[in-house]
Length: 421
Image (cartoon, rainbow, N blue to C red; front, side, top):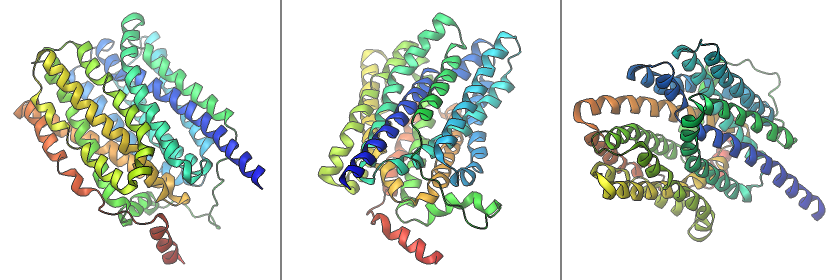
């Protein structure tokens, strides 16, 4: 019996190792191609600000909407083949960009279609990753696994954009798009090497047809859960406000404050070390202080930094201030995110994971797009510094949405099962 347990753990470690490899390769490819569509639109198609803004906001938002019906469809399928399929889809549509570029047929409309497709595939892939991790990793190993994925994300974020910018300067504007496509192909290969291991979902018998109401099932589960509802509202609002002020900080630093683009890149690459540190500390902090306290403290700290960005001035002092603020923000996020991801997986039944994560991610992406557009409009009237300050001030109130206590994982799930019975 003990031998079987050891073999099971080795098998789980093997499968997660390949998943981690696939996740890391594709994450680096995505960060390497950071803002690639906007740069291609500007440098190749000579698009104006309105077209670039449309590409940046509408593509992810429409992709989020299109991903909604995929959640119920993916729920009753094995997750590894779904992840491989989304990798191959992203690879194919991204390769259409350099092909059209070589044929001198590239258009903003094509970039928009590719952006929508990639966004929908991204959400589906991330939701399937969560379900796959829950299937192959023992419950006691979930926090360690999520911490490793979080560390990988911040490492890729730190290294990818500077290297991608250098590649564009040396080899041309579509270089990073090709690299991103290849990363998805390599990710699909790594997932293929992982073998099976994910649970084959049980289908209802008889199999019901997908109804319009089924598309809302993920949101229904989140909003009915006393544990997940406050975390959902908190994370969606925090992510939206942080991302809404990000382009305004670019305008402020590179415009009136006179920072060079490389200085702006440095101000956001160096603080990513904080995300790596925070992710590695998260498991130790939970072991010492408990999940509830870590979620509340780290969740509150990540809301306290952004308001300081409104005080950024020119010169070295201003650059150091941005680095310090971003380091504090990203470190707090590095601690919070893996604990939050683990808590969310533990509180979600295995037959609802994909729908729940898809609904969560789609809402987050849509809210980021809406808030980014609203804050851009606000900045046109008030200036970027005032708009950044307002976003930071609203963030200070978001800890009120964090749950005051965390119920036992099974309590809500058992009540749901009783209600169904």
